[in-house]
Length: 141
Image (cartoon, rainbow, N blue to C red):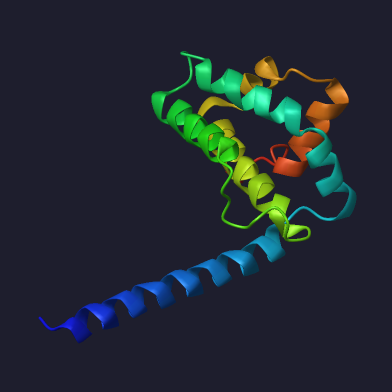
């Protein structure tokens, strides 16, 4: 294998990563919470982080759920994001979209009552989280 093979491989991987990142940005633009819902979600962020931490520590939840929650906490704690926070709107939307996706998975496996039992905030805050995450929608039978 020649040196040009490795350069071609390196360039191919870099292009694939760049294209994947652009695709992620497009997806975030499409699925991000709109208007006041995003503002409310950001206001509730401290309660949501406490919720995720409490759910991750709950030994009654399935292990796979707790692992996903622990990985989410680690991602939120890291200073490096997929989309930097200085990017308007999308900088924080990637965190919100990831939290929503993980909470939906938790509800599918453990039920909305488990989330409600660990919610540290107000009833209005929980209603906002439920609405933002789409947890109030029941899957069709």
